[in-house]
Image (cartoon, rainbow, N blue to C red):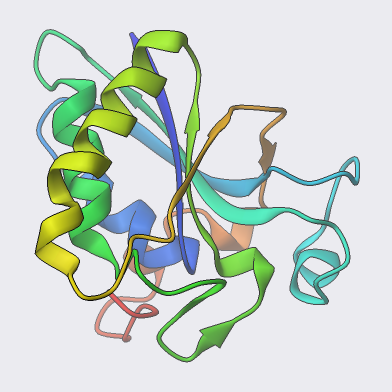
Length: 156
């Protein structure tokens, strides 16, 4: 089983989108990339934890490649926006690929470089960072789109 972690704005829509990818076994909404232990949604939203809303994905590499997941990540959001996605503004909504290995880092950098010309004259603001502790979000955030059918889920 492989693990991938992405931050692309509000995690509800990101989670729902990745769950629809064949080969993705699970997707969990949470927080990562910050300096506060056991962050809560309220603390992350106030912008003082350094964490991004992110989704940790478990996938079967025999059925879906990490490169495919990275391309899906870029397609889900506007990676040229710095610290925001649509109406959601703040560091917690930044665009980040959190890599779990050197191989993932190389793939993420390759895909980012390949896609750069598609966004001209803007530049891709997505950062590529080493994965750190992933803190699972509160239960009411998990499978939010499934629990709230018909409701608009963030920017996706």
